[in-house]
Figure 1: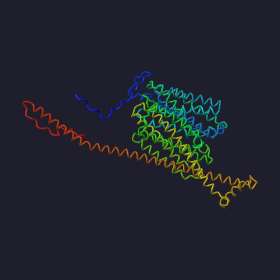
Figure 2: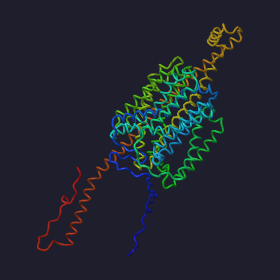
Figure 3: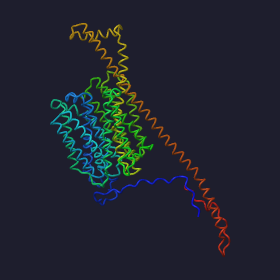
Figure 4: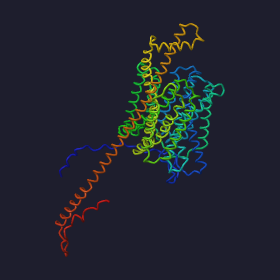
Length: 614
């Protein structure tokens, strides 16, 4: 018998074998509706109403605790720098320490949930955080401040997940999507809440930083006690950690820390004037490359590198980065603009009360209108709100005060409270299409895009503002010619206002010219911030157009595929009918009619054709 011809295509490679995970505890006899959605998640048993309320309250407390410490530092950074004697660069390291640990801890959170249980990880993180906060009250140095901020990042990684899991227990399983939206959004409330409560905290006991850290330590202890008292239902625990997981973590953690350091310190030291920033980027690139090579060839990787080659995943990462970038307009644009005009936490408190209300409204509106079909419209609506907020703010003057920003920042806050939940649900859906193993990659990817997206937004917008301020300042100062009558009149007016303080006319005139130059710099800052607002609005509009184009292309491709399938059905039916008729006629000719019976009439194509689906 001749050998069959060789196949023109090589056989498809078989997928790498996966090891069966080893259960660490026996699985309880759950009913179908009680089973956890995946390993590492708690089960969903029935709870009485009072316990569901308790789960919701603990979720709010834990979610606020995880991010409030970082918010207090951001809101009161000038106070901390002054009382601790820190430079702006040292003050920036306080925010960087939180982000460095928070992002890298998410590499291990999901597998910790699967092997040790979420309660163990949360108790360890919150316990370390509370102890270091209390230690900082006794020592009070810059080193312990950095340690507390790093511990806050560890606790934040645990608390964000813990808040989500506790919130899911507060309602029946049919409301999982709505509770996911609320659980993701609670952590966002910490930043405006920190601005609202900071003046009251600083007014107590002489207004020192001890009040901030005393409140932070007390909140961490309360969250720790609540997690210990009200435990999550048990889930499935299995052995998932491998030695190479820790090698990947040892490579990725310093790489992310280096990238965070560059983003935080870049515009303070200026990007092209500081060689060590370049060395940090080179080191981060080398470490990330090594970790990707290791993960790419593993049987059970910690990070699914092949998933990132998918076009849908790349578009999701880019979209998540841009969405987070757009929210940076609030902290870089509005807050820094008002700080440049001399506004402090007391004056900004009403503005952030409006911001807090906007985030709550956006989060609740997103939860109440949540359906699988509304995820994309909710994200598109939030982008529209970002664009409108930027357009409302692009014509600010030095006479504007916090109340002038109420409308624009309220709209921006509604959008910020609305997009996070749908974005996370879309990413979870993409990850679960490939299996639960991809959830580790998604959790890391989501954390990195949201954290680094915010840092990239702050770094880029601050750099753009400084660049535009220097250009406007040089342009304005170059026009301050003392021979110009208007300039001379303005200098004389400034000098006359100082006549009761400075008796020397020459010194008085010089001081008047210096004050005029200061006014020119202030107006340059105003014009530069207006450019920042416009840049943010144009970015939102461009992003919206890009998303609409992608959605339109996807819809057009689906319609073409449906039309092609509809045209193919009649041809397939006719071909099948002809094939069946030929086979039937050949069979009849070969076998002949049965004995004792008359020949059967030939079969018609209508009798053999398969029924066409309705």
